[in-house]
Image (cartoon, rainbow, N blue to C red; front, side):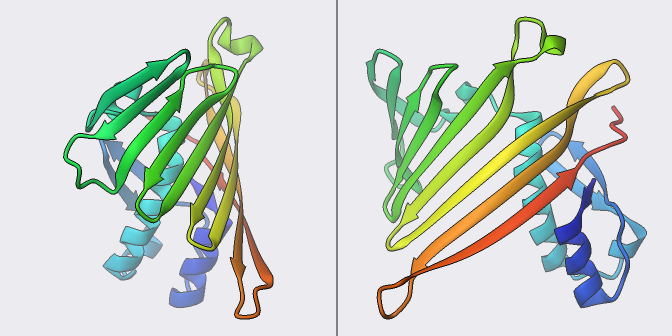
Length: 198
Protein backbone atom coordinates (compact mmCIF):
# COMPACT_ATOMS: atom_id res chain seq x y z
CA UNK A 1 0.00 0.00 0.00
CA UNK A 2 1.17 3.55 -0.75
CA UNK A 3 -0.07 6.73 0.86
CA UNK A 4 1.40 10.23 0.73
CA UNK A 5 -0.13 11.14 4.10
CA UNK A 6 1.40 8.14 5.86
CA UNK A 7 4.70 8.72 4.07
CA UNK A 8 4.83 12.37 5.18
CA UNK A 9 3.89 11.44 8.76
CA UNK A 10 6.76 8.97 9.08
CA UNK A 11 9.28 11.26 7.37
CA UNK A 12 8.25 14.25 9.51
CA UNK A 13 8.55 12.61 12.92
CA UNK A 14 11.15 9.94 12.25
CA UNK A 15 13.20 11.41 9.40
CA UNK A 16 12.74 8.25 7.35
CA UNK A 17 11.72 7.79 3.75
CA UNK A 18 8.80 5.41 3.46
CA UNK A 19 7.64 4.55 -0.03
CA UNK A 20 5.22 1.76 0.76
CA UNK A 21 3.86 -0.44 3.55
CA UNK A 22 3.13 -4.14 3.44
CA UNK A 23 -0.23 -5.07 4.97
CA UNK A 24 -0.95 -8.52 6.37
CA UNK A 25 -4.61 -9.20 7.04
CA UNK A 26 -5.95 -12.15 9.02
CA UNK A 27 -9.62 -11.84 9.89
CA UNK A 28 -9.96 -8.47 11.61
CA UNK A 29 -6.27 -8.36 12.57
CA UNK A 30 -4.08 -6.00 10.55
CA UNK A 31 -0.29 -5.89 10.73
CA UNK A 32 1.82 -3.24 9.02
CA UNK A 33 5.35 -4.25 8.09
CA UNK A 34 8.23 -2.26 6.70
CA UNK A 35 11.86 -1.86 7.76
CA UNK A 36 11.30 1.87 8.32
CA UNK A 37 8.59 1.11 10.87
CA UNK A 38 10.86 -0.74 13.31
CA UNK A 39 11.57 2.29 15.48
CA UNK A 40 8.17 3.90 15.15
CA UNK A 41 6.29 4.40 18.44
CA UNK A 42 3.52 1.80 19.02
CA UNK A 43 0.88 4.55 19.34
CA UNK A 44 1.78 5.83 15.86
CA UNK A 45 1.53 2.29 14.49
CA UNK A 46 -1.87 1.89 16.14
CA UNK A 47 -2.97 5.17 14.54
CA UNK A 48 -1.75 4.01 11.11
CA UNK A 49 -3.49 0.66 11.60
CA UNK A 50 -6.82 2.44 12.27
CA UNK A 51 -6.41 4.48 9.06
CA UNK A 52 -5.56 1.40 7.02
CA UNK A 53 -8.39 -0.63 8.58
CA UNK A 54 -10.92 2.05 7.59
CA UNK A 55 -9.76 1.86 3.98
CA UNK A 56 -9.54 -1.92 3.95
CA UNK A 57 -13.12 -2.10 5.21
CA UNK A 58 -14.17 -0.92 1.75
CA UNK A 59 -12.12 -3.71 0.19
CA UNK A 60 -12.94 -6.54 2.58
CA UNK A 61 -16.48 -5.41 3.18
CA UNK A 62 -18.86 -6.39 5.97
CA UNK A 63 -22.08 -8.29 5.63
CA UNK A 64 -25.30 -6.60 6.66
CA UNK A 65 -25.82 -9.39 9.18
CA UNK A 66 -22.48 -8.57 10.81
CA UNK A 67 -23.26 -4.85 10.81
CA UNK A 68 -26.58 -5.24 12.69
CA UNK A 69 -25.69 -8.21 14.88
CA UNK A 70 -25.83 -6.05 18.04
CA UNK A 71 -29.15 -4.48 17.07
CA UNK A 72 -32.78 -5.57 17.12
CA UNK A 73 -35.12 -4.95 14.19
CA UNK A 74 -38.04 -2.87 15.50
CA UNK A 75 -39.65 -1.55 12.31
CA UNK A 76 -39.70 -2.14 8.55
CA UNK A 77 -41.55 -0.16 5.91
CA UNK A 78 -40.85 -0.58 2.21
CA UNK A 79 -37.07 -0.42 1.72
CA UNK A 80 -36.48 1.15 5.16
CA UNK A 81 -35.49 -0.92 8.22
CA UNK A 82 -35.04 0.46 11.74
CA UNK A 83 -32.85 -1.20 14.39
CA UNK A 84 -32.33 -0.47 18.09
CA UNK A 85 -29.25 -1.22 20.16
CA UNK A 86 -29.96 -4.43 22.10
CA UNK A 87 -27.98 -3.40 25.17
CA UNK A 88 -29.22 0.17 25.34
CA UNK A 89 -25.69 1.26 26.23
CA UNK A 90 -24.05 1.26 22.79
CA UNK A 91 -22.55 4.33 21.14
CA UNK A 92 -25.15 4.10 18.36
CA UNK A 93 -28.66 3.87 19.78
CA UNK A 94 -30.60 3.55 16.53
CA UNK A 95 -29.75 2.55 12.98
CA UNK A 96 -31.92 3.10 9.91
CA UNK A 97 -31.03 1.27 6.70
CA UNK A 98 -32.44 1.90 3.24
CA UNK A 99 -32.04 -1.32 1.22
CA UNK A 100 -32.10 0.10 -2.29
CA UNK A 101 -29.21 -0.73 -4.63
CA UNK A 102 -29.70 2.62 -6.38
CA UNK A 103 -29.76 4.56 -3.12
CA UNK A 104 -28.28 2.44 -0.32
CA UNK A 105 -28.18 4.49 2.85
CA UNK A 106 -27.35 4.00 6.53
CA UNK A 107 -28.35 6.52 9.21
CA UNK A 108 -26.74 6.09 12.63
CA UNK A 109 -28.23 8.06 15.51
CA UNK A 110 -25.86 8.69 18.40
CA UNK A 111 -26.27 10.61 21.63
CA UNK A 112 -23.89 13.27 20.30
CA UNK A 113 -25.19 13.49 16.74
CA UNK A 114 -26.08 11.71 13.50
CA UNK A 115 -23.99 9.94 10.83
CA UNK A 116 -25.43 9.47 7.33
CA UNK A 117 -23.63 7.21 4.87
CA UNK A 118 -24.60 6.74 1.23
CA UNK A 119 -23.20 3.99 -1.00
CA UNK A 120 -23.17 4.12 -4.79
CA UNK A 121 -23.11 0.84 -6.71
CA UNK A 122 -22.85 0.29 -10.46
CA UNK A 123 -22.40 -2.62 -12.82
CA UNK A 124 -19.06 -2.82 -14.63
CA UNK A 125 -18.34 -4.73 -17.83
CA UNK A 126 -16.03 -7.04 -15.91
CA UNK A 127 -18.51 -7.55 -13.03
CA UNK A 128 -21.13 -9.07 -15.35
CA UNK A 129 -24.47 -8.74 -13.56
CA UNK A 130 -23.05 -7.91 -10.13
CA UNK A 131 -23.03 -4.42 -8.63
CA UNK A 132 -19.69 -2.95 -7.62
CA UNK A 133 -19.09 -0.26 -5.00
CA UNK A 134 -18.03 2.96 -6.73
CA UNK A 135 -18.17 5.60 -4.02
CA UNK A 136 -19.16 6.35 -0.44
CA UNK A 137 -20.42 9.68 0.85
CA UNK A 138 -20.55 10.23 4.62
CA UNK A 139 -21.97 13.21 6.51
CA UNK A 140 -21.29 13.56 10.22
CA UNK A 141 -23.23 16.01 12.35
CA UNK A 142 -22.08 16.39 15.95
CA UNK A 143 -23.07 19.53 17.83
CA UNK A 144 -22.00 22.56 15.79
CA UNK A 145 -19.45 20.55 13.82
CA UNK A 146 -20.10 18.88 10.48
CA UNK A 147 -17.84 16.63 8.43
CA UNK A 148 -18.32 15.43 4.87
CA UNK A 149 -16.18 12.55 3.61
CA UNK A 150 -16.28 11.65 -0.09
CA UNK A 151 -14.58 8.38 -1.01
CA UNK A 152 -14.01 7.01 -4.50
CA UNK A 153 -12.86 3.47 -5.29
CA UNK A 154 -10.82 2.67 -8.42
CA UNK A 155 -10.38 -0.91 -9.63
CA UNK A 156 -7.87 -2.76 -11.76
CA UNK A 157 -7.27 -6.33 -12.86
CA UNK A 158 -4.75 -8.36 -10.88
CA UNK A 159 -4.08 -11.97 -11.81
CA UNK A 160 -7.42 -12.30 -13.64
CA UNK A 161 -9.30 -10.84 -10.67
CA UNK A 162 -10.56 -7.26 -10.42
CA UNK A 163 -9.55 -5.64 -7.14
CA UNK A 164 -9.53 -2.11 -5.67
CA UNK A 165 -6.27 -0.43 -6.68
CA UNK A 166 -6.84 3.04 -5.27
CA UNK A 167 -9.06 4.76 -2.72
CA UNK A 168 -9.30 8.56 -2.90
CA UNK A 169 -10.79 10.47 0.00
CA UNK A 170 -11.78 14.13 0.33
CA UNK A 171 -12.71 15.35 3.81
CA UNK A 172 -14.35 18.72 4.54
CA UNK A 173 -14.64 19.77 8.18
CA UNK A 174 -16.86 22.76 8.97
CA UNK A 175 -16.82 24.37 12.43
CA UNK A 176 -17.97 27.77 13.70
CA UNK A 177 -15.48 30.16 15.27
CA UNK A 178 -16.12 32.30 18.38
CA UNK A 179 -17.80 34.95 16.20
CA UNK A 180 -20.17 32.44 14.65
CA UNK A 181 -18.43 32.41 11.28
CA UNK A 182 -17.86 29.08 9.53
CA UNK A 183 -14.32 27.78 9.28
CA UNK A 184 -13.65 25.09 6.70
CA UNK A 185 -10.74 22.67 6.71
CA UNK A 186 -10.12 20.31 3.80
CA UNK A 187 -7.97 17.21 3.49
CA UNK A 188 -7.36 14.98 0.48
CA UNK A 189 -5.83 11.51 0.76
CA UNK A 190 -5.03 8.77 -1.72
CA UNK A 191 -4.28 5.16 -0.82
CA UNK A 192 -2.87 2.85 -3.49
CA UNK A 193 -3.09 -0.94 -3.18
CA UNK A 194 -1.03 -3.32 -5.28
CA UNK A 195 0.69 -6.70 -5.33
CA UNK A 196 -2.24 -8.58 -3.81
CA UNK A 197 -1.28 -11.95 -2.32
CA UNK A 198 -3.41 -14.69 -0.76
